[in-house]
Length: 178
Image (cartoon, rainbow, N blue to C red; front, side):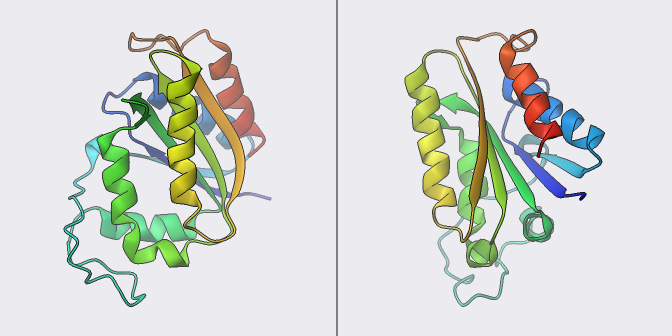
């Protein structure tokens, strides 16, 4: 059965390591006949949450009119969410945090989704683990989320350094079997 997969890439660099892993996940998922869309947060106009609380009340709307308005519908329509980020100071980067904060108007409507995490770090298991834990804090606020996989790479500083690693094969395989 074909699934609707939404990949949220917080890589600030097109062809950054986490973005490359997203592309490999997407390649596998497309080969399996799924519908896949990748959203690169760096290419979108997404403002910070202002804490105005206009979203309180379950209407699913935000007072701000930016690209999140369109993304809300895509999140709700997805069967599978892939959240991807490079590690900055042992957690996901600012683009991902801004995205997560802006999900507030619809977070209570996000239900029953499979979720994958993609994490790229320059060094060590600890930054990957703490970033995954941060993702879990977010997905723990949602209903019926099923964590299906973690794709991570560490020890790579250079853009594109992920190519040729086992993480590339894993990303493709996870996408193929999503």
